[in-house]
Structures are given as C-alpha cells and as structure tokens.
Image (cartoon, rainbow over all chains, first blue to last red; front, side):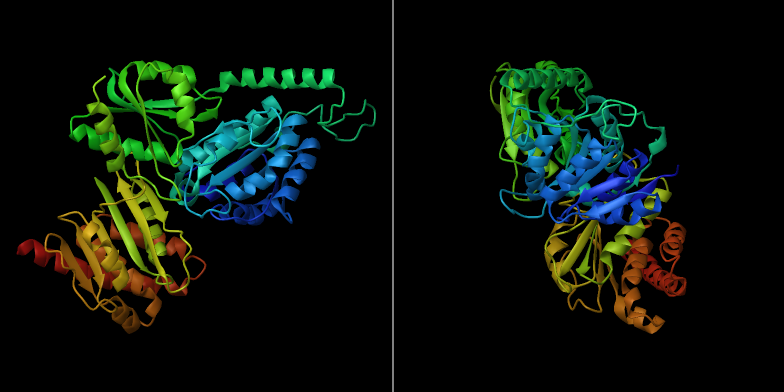
Length: 353
Length: 186
C-alpha cells in the first residue's frame, strides 16, 4: 500500500480498523477529536459501529460489555477524559478484558489546557484506577509508529486479556506524516475467545466479573494477575540512538520529546558533545535493564519529559545511583526545543564526576 | 536537504491548506515530511500557523524555533515570526494585507500582492495559493508540477476550483522566480 499523509489521530483510527476492530465507544475531547471523527465516518463503511456515549464513564462501561462479548474494542480520549474512564479500566483489568485505550495527553491537572503534555505517565504506568493492576503502555514517537503500535496493542490486549494503553500527546495526535499500513486483519480471521459471553447453548456459562468477596479467592486472583503483569516483561521494547562506543550524556525520553532529542543529537555533534538517546517504547513494562546497561556507557543521564518529573523516577530506579541523573521538564503545553536539551546536556556534562 | 518552513496568517486564509499541499507534494517527491498545525484555542479571524519540515533524513523535531523560511499572509504573523527566520532564509510577504516590509536585511524578501492577484483571477480565496507559488518560485524547494498534481487530487471533488488555484500558483511562482533572481543578482 502506498504511503498516505495523515494526521496522527487519523492514522490511529485507521490502524484500529486494520487491526480488525469494528467498535468504538467514546466521548469528544481536544486534542484527539479527529479520532472519534474519523471512526464515526469510517466504521459504518466497514460494517462497524461508532457510539458517542453520554460520558467517558459510560463509554468505558460500553467497552467492558463489548469486550466481554469477545469483540475487539477501542476508545480514545485525552487526559481529563481518561481520568473519567478509569473506573471502567480498573473493572476491565479485574475482569481480564482486552481493550485498547488511546490517551492523547494534554496539560493538567483538572481541565488544564489542550496543548501537548506527558503528565499522565504515572496514571498510565502505575495502574491509573483503583486496585493493584497494571496496563501495558506503548508510547509512539512518530505517526507511523503510532499506527504500528495501535495494531500491536490489539494483539497484546488479546494475548494478555488485559487493557493496553497507547500513550501519545497532543503533538503526535496533530502532526501529519507519511504513514503506511503494513498489516490488515479481518475480524472474521481473529482467533475465537472461549471465555467470551457469546451465548452458552451447548456449553457451560462464561462469567465475566471482578467481584471476589472471599478474601482467599481475591488474594489468589491478585497474584494471578500479578503473574500476568510479570510475564508482560517479555514485551519490553526500546530504541537506542548514537550510544555505540559510549556517550557524554545519555538522554532518556519517550514520545514527542524523544524526537526532539534526535534533533538535539545532531546539534550537539556540531559542538563536539556526544549525546546518546534511550527511548522506551513500552513504558510498562519499563525497559529498566536495557536502560541500566546503556547508562553504563555514558557519563551522565538526562531525563527530558513534558512533565515536572515522572518517568525520571523509573530511570533513577534503573540507574540505581551508578550515574548522575539530571532532569529537564516543560509543562502546561510548552515544549522544549532541541537547543534546550543541548544546553541541559552541556551543563550535566560539565559537572565533575 | 533539510528545510523548516513556517506558514502563518488569519484563520480562514488557508495557511494550513497550503502547508498540507507543500508537505504532500514533498512526500510524493520522496522527501521525509512533517506538518504541524498550531491548534491553540483560536477563533475565526484569529491568527493561525503551521510548520512544515521537508528533509532527506528522518525528521526529529516537527517544531521549529529557527525556520529557514516564512510565508506570512497578515501583519501579526510577520511581527511574530520575522526575527526567528535564519539568516539567508526567505520571507514571503503578502503585501495586500501587510503594510510594512520586513526589517531583516539578511534574508531574501519576496513581496507579493496575493489578495489583489487572487481577486483579479476571480476568486479572493486563492490568495494563499499565490503566496505558496511565490515561495516555490523563490526557493525551488518543491517541484511546482508535483504541487499542481496534489492540488488536483485535493480539489478532486470541486474541479471548478482547480483551474483558478493553478493560475494563482503560477502567478505567484513567476513573481517568486523574478524577485529571487533580482536578489541573487545584487
């Protein structure tokens, strides 16, 4: 298929269709409105259904029902809307239901603003709703990668029977880049889900539930879920750039900031400073081991985020004090430039080890 | 080749559209491209801009603080972005709505009465295309033929608009070529 020039949001919507998803439930919010808009036009063309729910809370419960019936289901929202969905996400994690959730983050807290942010890292990677659960989190940094990861997200959700979140920001949602859809899955070719509530004629009833009043049973359920989350460690993904042979400063950044970091690498090279980049693609599971190894070949680590410092905690835990870890953050919808990252890296490199 | 271009004007003047056409044509010509709109809480008649990056390498930052070129259709946009343009860059100024010239002397300035030309051609809305033509003429960055091709594709549902937009692009292009040649000759 030829490359198309698409907005990140539109590419995410088209990718869901290529993944064999035919159901979208959601509620509008900037800066991801192009996703529901796109789905509302495209889904009826492919025999699917788009439902604009009365609220995000309702949308997440519609996802619960449709996922329980064994269908690939999808929603998207932005930070405040994702918070509203969290009750349903916790229930889906508890009931082990596969669902793909896209969060195109904007500045917060509260209603905040509508410009790009990465301030929902904690919410995404540490559970988000109540209860001791995790969702697999994928962080694209280009429109092409957003499309690829959305398709993978559906497969991972089914594989682990767990919600998967694709965590982008307003910038990745709004930019246009060339994109190619490399894979098309037909809904009828998807494997059967023997656990789904598809009508129990001729078989035992399937029950989908997150209520366990017996504490022994609930403890077992929690440890079973935990074993699943630990097994997800095998899905860890990351990308390194310019780290071969060691570097002065290793930048750790994901999503939009990682691509700004790539421009910073080029700018720093002209100044004789070698910046390497470690870009986590899975934020949960976090590529801690690989990051620790990459940090060993650097004099210092600089974490850059569109937050006041969230991923930096996971980086510090991974580096475990073996290297100095600096932080540079912009918030509220402000985005750092490559020159800012070079200046921060220069400062960090100048500190005697 | 690596070029960052900021296109700015009032909402409704079509700066997002000409940015998209340029990005799309660049993609068809085999370049890496990004198009980034400003999507702040704007109102009709408010300012609006987008950034297009064309490159032969994968594009890092899609935002530019120091663009190589600036296309401005209104005065607030010239005021806002003039100083950011890199020395040796290009500024295309829509003189129909901008009553001053850029202060910069280290860039190639192309002045084009986009609205007057568009009105003369019979459709005031084609002013954006005149400005795009002027930029393409002055910069040679994207082949005019590939822009015309994507223009036809983008206006496929409204074929009546193709001819006038093509003429607008052509008129702007000639002005761009002439003025850039004059600057180069100095």
